Length: 121
Image (cartoon, rainbow, N blue to C red; front, side):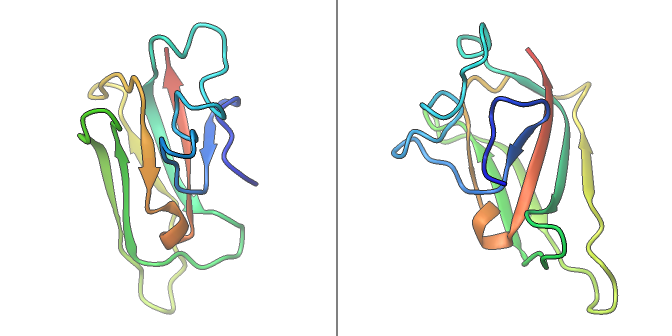
C-alpha cells in the first residue's frame, strides 16, 4: 500500500516532502472537501509494520510542520529482543493534540513502519 490521505484513518508508509508535494497540503493529500484549509487534529495514531510480516528497523519517525520545521510528534522506534515480535504502538492524542495545518513525515522508509492516523477536523 502507498500513502493515502483520502481515507480514514490516513495511511502513510513512505516519507513525505514539500518538494515532491507529498505533504498534507501537497498535490497527493488534502483533497477532502473543507479539510485542506484548516488541517487536522489527530486523535489516535498507530505505528505498525509497513508491510505485514516485514521486520521494523530501529530509528525515529518525525512528524513536522514544513513551514516552521517544528516537530509535531517524535516517535522513537526501539526494537524488542530478537525472540519477541514488534508490538503495534498506539498513541492516543484526544486531549493533547494540536491542530496540524500541514505536515511531513520522515523516518517511515528507514524504519519500514507505517502510520495510521485518525483525526478530527
